[in-house]
Image 1 (cartoon, rainbow, N blue to C red):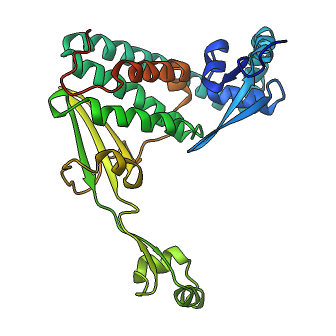
Image 2 (tube, rainbow, N blue to C red; image 1 turned 30 degrees about the horizontal axis):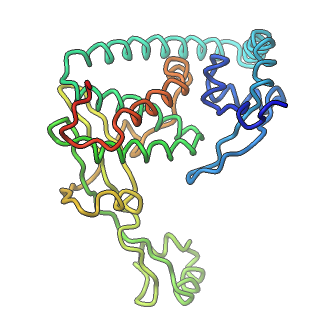
Image 3 (tube, rainbow, N blue to C red; image 1 turned 120 degrees about the vertical axis):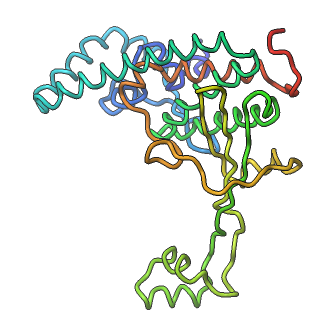
Length: 291
C-alpha cells in the first residue's frame, strides 16, 4: 500500500513538476483538475498538499488545458488579452536576463557577501509570492531572516535597523461607545484620540526591524515585525532608523507578476532558500562558506 503522506506535493513542488505558476495550480484546483488532499498548518497560513498521482494525471492533460485557457482568454479579452500575453512574455524574458546577469555578478563578489546577496535575491521573490496569497511562505521568510541575523554582519553587507512604530490602542468600553456616537470606527477613533487612560496599549505593536542588504549596486530590503524579530535580536544593540524603505509604491513588497512567476519559479525560490539554510545553519560571522 503506498504511503499517502509521502505522495503529497506542496504547491511549489507541483509548480516544478508541471512547469507552471502557483496561480495556475490554484486555477487547476478551482476547475477540478487538482484537489488539495491535506492542509499543512503553518503559523502564517495553511499550505495545501496535492496528490502526486493526481499531478501525474494532470501532466498528460496539461497541454490541452493550457490551450483552452489561452483560447478562452483570447475570446473574452480580444486585443487586451493578446497585449497581456505579450507583456507577460516580455516581463518573463526581462526577468530571466536580469537573473542571469545578477547571478553571474556574484562571481566577482567576496564569497560571504555573494551567498548573502543570492539569498536576498530569492527572498525578494519569496516575499512577492507570499504577497500573492501564499502566506504560509512567511514561515520560510522568518527562518531566512533569522539565519541572516546570526550568520552575517555589516562586513558582509547586512545592516539591521529598528524602526519605531506607534502602539496599538485597544479601546475601553467607554471609548467604544464614544466612537459609535461619533460614527467613527474603533481604529479611526483610536488614531484620532489615542484613547484614554483605561484603554489598553500594546507598545511597539507596529514597530519593525529592517534588514538592509547592500553591496556595490545591489540592494535589497526586508522587514520583520517587532513581535517576531525581537526574540532573535533582544541581546543586540540595533541602531534606530527613522522611516522605512519602500519598493516602488509598496511599503512592504508587492505581489509577484505573471511574467516574474514564469521566470523565477516558486520551486526554484524555495529550493534555493532551503539550500541556503542548510549551508548557513548555526553559522558564526567568521565562518568560511567555501568549506
